[in-house]
Length: 83
Image (cartoon, rainbow, N blue to C red; front, top):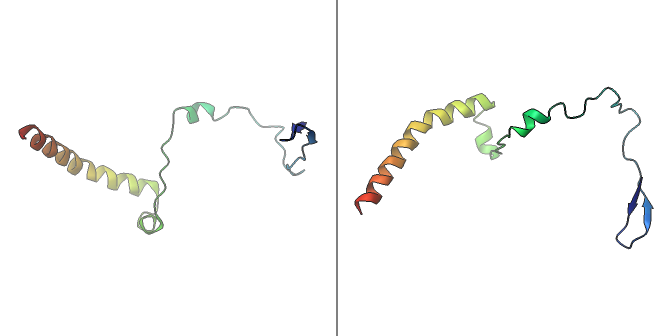
């Protein structure tokens, strides 16, 4: 395979794949359906990540906060309507 350089000359592309990698038994698009459903990746700051050993603990903590946040939003909407 040749790659065109910025100056327009064809340059031979060097394969960076190691000889011990064997993808002959691989299945193309094996995880495509699950990936297409979407994911939300959130990176925690190191000090916060120390408090949560896994995603389950993060999710349970956030679920516990949801009712508090919902009350706060309702209260904010009421004060905005009164103004």
